[in-house]
Amino acid sequence: MILAEFTPSARDILRAPSLNQRRLAQLLPVPADIETVALEARRSPDPEKRLLAGELLRLLALQEIERRNLEELRASSAQFRAIVENLLTALVTIDEEGRIQGLNPAAERMYGYTRAELKGRSVTLLMATDSHEKALSMLRRTLSERKGQSVEGQARRKNGQLFPVELMLFETSGPHGRLFTGNVRDLTDRKAAQRLQTDLVSIVSHELRTPLASIRGSLTLIGTGIFGEVPAEAAELVAIAERNCNRLIDLVSDLLDLERFENSEMPLEMEATALREVIQRGIEGVKGFAAQQGVTIEVGETGGSVWANGSRLVQVVVNLLSNAIKFSPPGAPVRILTVERRGSCEVRVEDKGRGIPRQFLHSIFERFGQVETSDSRVKGGTGLGLAICKSIVAKHLGQIGVESEEGLGSTFFFWIPKKSPLHPLGENEPLSEPSTHRVITQ
Amino acid sequence: MRVLIVDDENDVRRIAKLSLTRLGGMEVHEAENGFHCLESVAGIQPDLILLDVMMPGMDGPSTLRALREEPETAHIPVIFVTAKSQRFETDSLCRLGAAGVVAKPFDPRRLTEEILSLMPGGTVH
Figure 1 (tube, rainbow over the protein chains, first blue to last red):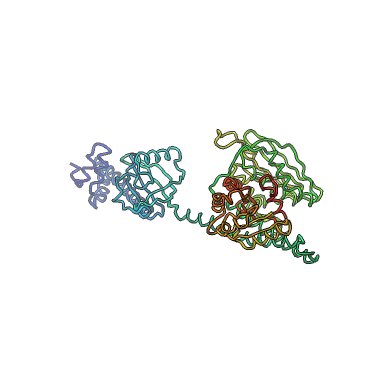
Figure 2 (figure 1 turned 90 degrees about the vertical axis):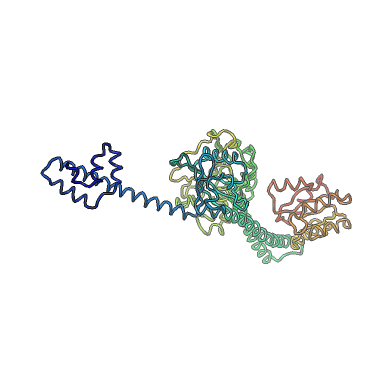
């Protein structure tokens, strides 16, 4: 028999009737010289022997490919394991019944348990709730409604301490069924930093505002002349000191406002608010300034009702009107109007001022993002007004933007929904696509 | 009109006092905290108490509650003076029984006018 000339494992390979068996046979140890034997056999004058040798060589080549694939898989698996083991983020894997199947060292450090202590135990050990059913239902809800999104919640360490976490759940399937892995981040430090920041802003603003208020109060009282007539030059200096003091007080107030809007989790008190009234109150707030600058305020169509905090909207209107007045030449009009849309209302403030160069259209809504750095000194203002407007409008789930043509003027606009977000969504239509001269902040 | 100003900031008390005496023609007394206010209020018998909200020891709201518990002082109108001037903050202060709230920093030129407008019935006792 020709096959007898090959090694026993080669015989097994060639005798295997199906591909699967052949593959199994490939895993059997093959003598080192089998390839040489096969190569020699291919040169044999016997056609059957050549055929079998060719088949053997083909199988040897397949075996080599399989071996390399396996090596790559092993290397990749080791690499993946090393990444998971060294991640700073905690990973916890559970099965469909909420039993813990695995966790990485970061999770061991975060929760204070070892893998052995948790393997097969209920996930409630790591959660604020003691009820396994509640925990399961919460995780299932998160998985169905917030899959791939992060949610915040409370977790529990081995010592019983509850701590805030951010969690993102994702599903994987393994040989033993569906598995769910939680990507968990400890928020203790972040929350502490937020609290510190809030406290710091509050303390600093109080510590700054109190002495500033006393300086301003003193200057104001001197200016009233209740202590006798103030010489003209002294009165001028008192006025300068008072004006700069006001600027500092405004700056501190604006910084405090910004921190409050951007970092506070406390929602604004909202109600159905008539825009006509908001605009009237806004105009009242800047009437004196407009007269002083020789600018007239024209009021266009103003109607509609929005879901808003009236006082905060007035703050936005006052800010936009003040800016428009500030940058308008004397005698020029500033126009304010509203545009009602299907699900939202837009307020527009138009001026015929110097306009805004295109490169500044985005940055003007950032803190101290004025077109000219000298603007706050020359034109007044803190450089925070538009950033505050942007934050307030964002709190109303709206958007703010600007259209401007250098040398011709600008139109600042903002829109906010007519109804509370608790009403069915889908009615708030977006504005038209921004043109090159139009910027809507995100 | 006799006013008792309660504030832990000496400068604030001084400016308010000058404003109310010189511009408002009022008689002004001072207390530097809630305890001091409760000690002196019976002897002064003010027509109005201007009460700071944030003070060490006994804050404004606690002082107001203590004033309301004593028959001798329960009727005295109290106006809070505070830097916390958001509506929900002023509303909660008014719910404690204050006649009104003056925002800090106040304008000394307008302080008299402001507190008179907040007095019950808008009148001077």
